[in-house]
Length: 473
Ligand SMILES: Cc1cc2nc3c(=O)[nH]c(=O)nc-3n(C[C@H](O)[C@H](O)[C@H](O)COP(=O)(O)OP(=O)(O)OC[C@H]3O[C@@H](n4cnc5c(N)ncnc54)[C@H](O)[C@@H]3O)c2cc1C
Image (tube, rainbow, N blue to C red; front, top):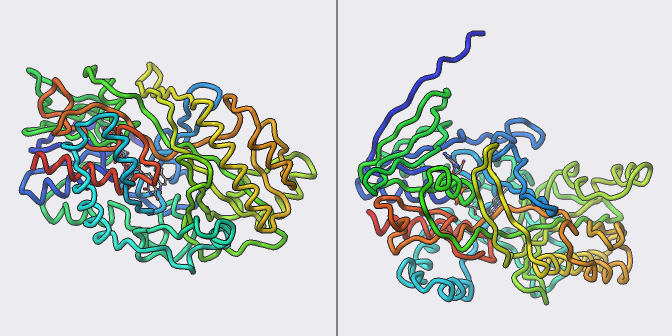
């Protein structure tokens, strides 16, 4: 078959938005509505709903889902690579930024009071709640996993608020919603931007910002066919490539910038074996959540996935493992999420991205404490066995002593398998979200969040994008 010829792509717009995720599409929509010529550049393609094992799903994840932090924790980093960004493979949970978390941001950097006064956060939440038809997850969508969490932590667990008005509960959000019931930004926001004249190129990899005379005048990179990409920005370049993308582009472009350091929410899975099969055929991927009592900045979420995916948490070998595999339908999974205090770095190395991040001993201890609470609650709810996956504690927990051993495991690196979906760049920008020292280079995504949101961050990221463009439109 003849090779596709490499073709170059040149274009221009008033505002060039890099990244078609939560921030990028919200920014594009409001800039276009204000009458500006807007061009979005996205390295992924339109999302498709796929089976979990399909190569298509891996194409919707940066690094094919294989990005990890360096070091013994080797945290798996999952970020969406599609029109819609991470929202195309997310659960659609919308959570308001807690005022006490915002107060911590202001303590770190008082300029947040003018960069995004809390009243603006409130207004943005009102607007996105209406547009995404956000509603409390209906009881029918909790699944067995959610119902169990509601019973286990009465008065603490709550159904989440989701922007998924057409959710039919297939437990498959993370592979792209097969029923198109999820309100991801590509479905809700992008059509409005298009009506206002916004345009997009997909499959294009932005590599560098072009700076001339102290001003960002465009970007360069690779076109969808492997040719050269050169796009001119008449007013500004908006970096919205997500924390892992935007920080790499800044680094590759050798643009001096300062950051408090990247941080994230780490997550750990706990699975419990029930006596009977779990009926999650009509469950949302994530419908019930609880702040974990006694563990600071930590939440427990009921996660519903297809039975074969619950196998990830199974311990043992040989016949014991085989026996548990036969009972996959009896597994429930919960996810412990901890807002880390540790700070790390995102860099572009010679052979690709490098993510340096070491949770502190306190971060790991909070994960272990959260997993212990989860294991205890599962046993309380009648689980026959619980698999906490913590080194130094029994692989199979069946008693209160086993649970205590989890909480007391030494919080050394690698003590428990961790993954992450939510990243916060800590990048310092001025009051108009511009990188100090470069005119017309605006960063409007999760890279500028100074610390974790503690709650799911999507609604806050969209509020930041709205605040940023309001200062440019
Ligand atoms: C599986 C999963 C489930 C989640 N569920 C929830 C949830 O239910 N609720 C919630 O609040 N949060 C959730 N999150 C987190 C939330 O989606 C993110 O915090 C949010 O989308 C971040 O917005 P962003 O615009 O900064 O980045 P993203 O939405 O990730 O968008 C960045 C975009 O930039 C593109 N890009 C990157 N580099 C380049 C480049 N060089 N050239 C061109 N384009 C580039 C990416 O492909 C991507 O489309 C979830 C995340 C994941 C991964």
